Length: 151
Ligand SMILES: CC(C)(COP(=O)(O)OP(=O)(O)OC[C@H]1O[C@@H](n2cnc3c(N)ncnc32)[C@H](O)[C@@H]1OP(=O)(O)O)[C@@H](O)C(=O)NCCC(=O)NCCS
Image (cartoon, rainbow, N blue to C red; front, side):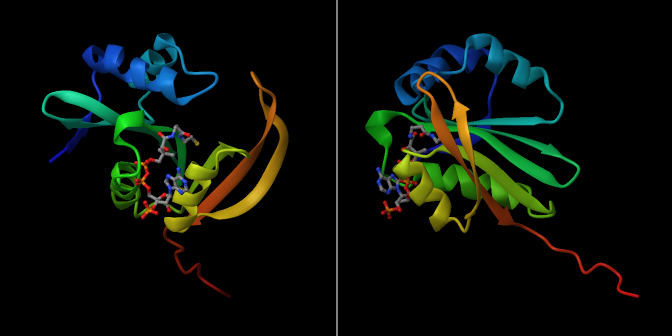
């Protein structure tokens, strides 16, 4: 049984190994380090038997939840861990207004996961990604829509 806990600086070797196996242009150690220091950022790992298998990173600012990284070790994919991490994030942020993310247009696995979690297509940003150049699909999920006072 895996457990979700906060990411620490000591986890970065394992996290970076997953990151490099997961993305064409992976985040650097410094990118994770800066995120760990960012008070708006939330970083969690999914750990089992003392080994990290997955992680999620999101920023939460003024009601907006921006999911900026999620990855599962290739050997542990399609076992529900990605969904578990996203569910964890959305549960913690249930009082925020909405969650938003960008994903490479060719990343059908991630797009399927997000659709299953209730995200819908918002827009597409042409050539948003580099190395290789690719469009971003922007997806959004409403979390909590307060009833604004109506005159
Ligand atoms: C995207 C990613 C995080 C999904 O994690 P995961 O743990 O494998 O996903 P889950 O097992 O929780 O899958 C949940 C649902 O997502 C969809 N899904 C996941 N992987 C899929 C795939 N390869 N093809 C089609 N649908 C897929 C399915 O609907 C799946 O439900 P099902 O298994 O009951 O059919 C994982 O593939 C990954 O790490 N990819 C590389 C990094 C990445 O692309 N991150 C997203 C950046 S925006």
